[in-house]
Length: 103
Image (cartoon, rainbow, N blue to C red):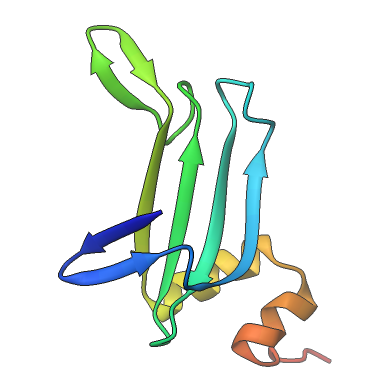
């Protein structure tokens, strides 16, 4: 998916995918998935897709909904928060470096 947001180009074909999270499968109206990407410039974004009853649904008429898809730019802090929730330790550290160690 390609999108221009705030004058900046976001392209899932050219950015590096860092990880993903989701629920169910595409045949389920509640399914959704998010993929974290990093552009060559270092910026982060999410590619989000979901079914007609997901948080990414979009209205197409009175009481009519369909699946949706969007690109959501993220700040470094937002990307770190998403990664902490959705990536394992090795994946997180590969992108953001080692976390603090508690003794």
